[in-house]
Image 1: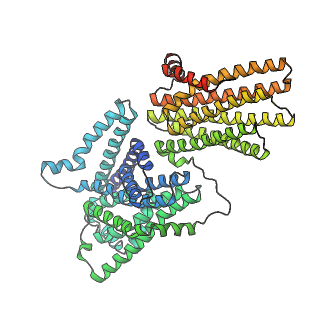
Image 2: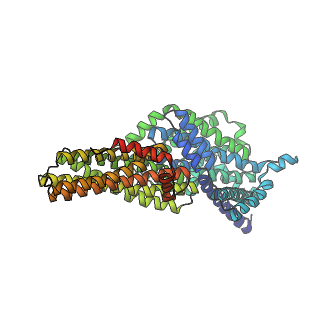
Image 3: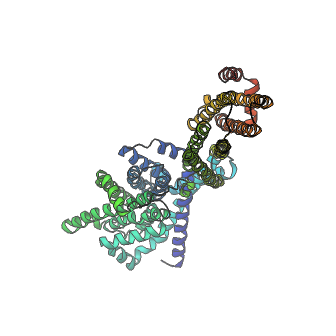
Length: 581
């Protein structure tokens, strides 16, 4: 083996790692909505979590990436720690798919069909298709598919280059002696763990081992402990990802490490005992791509079968290792780890926006209640809710901007734009709620009492505002189009009520029944109530836009308002319901 073989080895390794990296990223983007659907269907049943972890990892070709996602899910509150354990176990099985794909490189035979199965036969075709899709097609989905094909072709080319470059090592005695050393179980585990920790991918380290097997000097007895160690080394990515996360996320990463350490320790003990007691001849046979894939699968499946019944015990163990804080921890739901998978990050954004919406509506209803019966403790609750809503808007806005700058599908980009609009409207509703509380406090401080007629009129418009808020809230949370369409006619009713109530109050002041100070407060209240209805209209409009894949709200609004019998029917219904006596 000369300097040129070494250069080929380094170049092949670089291409292999690069191809695996870009293929994995493109797979995540391409399968993003599928990943979200799998996540949404996740239940407390162990087998569902196990299959989810297996399927996701098989798709994106990386247990490290899956576990990092899981850490992000747990950190953002999307997934419970107990569910995460099952997903992590499934990921350990799913990661073995890569080794089976790479084992195709070892297929030998003169049959045309068998020759076509060899990656060197079909990857050039995939590369051509991939470059055409990447360079000449406009759809992001098609470009991602092209990138997947290019990534696969690159990693298989790198694998082939590595295999060819190391063939010369077969004549180097030191290389054979090196792998004889790795037959020592402890040393083999350490080497496998260290190499995998450095490149942060068990799939990649197994691929390298498969490439080295082309020398014919790698025994099955040496590969088994190395593969065991690779499962420990791959945990480094999740552990690094958990830095700065909450305690449950740290526990999820620790579960990954603990699971692999315990599984490796038990299997290593069984392997060592079998080796020294029975000395199986198969361990001295040369390993190839296929046998390495088989060992990888058997070991990972055996560890999962062994520890799956003890998932609850693993949860208790990591909870003791990482105990709860004395003070309650604030969960950072908008985890930047999820930005690598935009559909999942968007799913969390929708969840957090729903929490923001709940707080804004809750604060509004409490604020409207202060107009009837003021309470300083309730007023303080409203201020806290308003402050929380402001923080939600800041964090969500920044997060959605970062998300929008990532490679997202057109549908996800539209959803992100909708959320950016909606959070502003919910935040403004919260601001108007605080304004209403301040009006109630001014009435209390100045001892201003509304006349019976004014109080009755105010109750009518308050009821209308409560209903329109509930409709907009339901439309957003449940994506309820029917509720969304009911908002606009009710918003027009509230506009009409505002003008009627303002006129009536002027008449009362002219008759000496109301003071000027009461008139100012009355005007402020009506303005805030009317603007709340405007923001509800904006929220409902966004829901309708999304349903029609059209973000031109004013166009949709105008068509519904002036060209729809349904609008007229609803307007008549609300006119009768909210009538000023």
